[in-house]
Image (tube, rainbow, N blue to C red):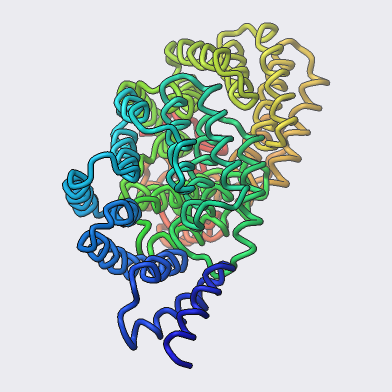
Length: 545
């Protein structure tokens, strides 16, 4: 096939989002003779959509240079925008900043160039990444009105960025309206594929942060259809899409599917450009392992999240709590809350802070629950109201006012059920059961706890299931009575020699018991066996040491 036919085939494949066919045809044409700048841009986008970001960066640099040398400043600035974003996703922030500075110098050659707004979007993104939301909004207010742009990507990107800035400056209603407007532009099919992926991910991510679960679910379903229509789309945004999908699957109770999506996202985002987002994938995977009681796997995934620049709180603190390290968990939550001022970002921390500080016996839990309730009143998202009711109810229950705890708890349970979030509904059910028990209504308590037990069992929420079984007297240990004695002493830090002396056994017999305990519990260390003893009430935590 001659070169012109290859180029035509590449353009046609690009038009129907057949990225592999487009890439291969344009690569073959490029091998014969360098492509012109328009086709070079198509080639770069196809490479980006296939996850070949290193290649896309090289092509965008060439396209930028060609446009700049030809005096096509606007087209050069558009290339610079996508180039800077790709470099940032790859964690190459210095290079991204250098290319932004170079593009700004080029823009001075053509004052009033409409595409200069692309550089404003990059400036706004830098402020967002730094948590400088007021400065971000300032930059956004200086951007031209999106309706005046003839560039669909620029118009949609401006609307999306404005929405994000408004949301993080407290104007939730106006911000959500802008984000919805950006999604309408996507639905019209006028923006490029890479811009479509970007807007989907940003909007769904913002919905998660705002606890707008219904919106997040609606847009995620639309995103899933869009991804299904182009099965060879494997770029950065596909990895981000997988993270959002994993989060929704977790909330909906499909935990095995959520684990699969999270693992795929981890693999995809660490295979090339996307390191900047890989931390989010590892964090989601860590959360799923923690909820299932797979604590060693969870710890590793949280560490992977940290190594990719992601804040592992509050999940890591909740893991420490589950392992019995209450002071460590409480200190972490106090530290991270002291550092976090943005109300939206605090909402993802406050529920964990209440849970951890209640277990630590700290009076701070009540003030954090009140703060969460105030944010929920101002915002109004159903999930946020459920979180607040759950926190307030837990605090009241801990304070010994079970009767006052029930109304917010029942409302929280109702909201979680309406939102189809079974795990949180079951956790609320446990609190309702304990409140009923405190009011001597043992019959209702038994019903609530049994309903929660069945949900935890269906979900595979091992630690929560074990707790409910302890509360209802249903727990059955896989260990023999002698093994229970041994693991209790292991949890107190006794050596095999000391255990042998205390139980009048040989050291060899104790070693065999310890080996059997490890096998039955599926653990590989004395520390993990001790964690089991603590979690299952074999030995009280305050006797350790």
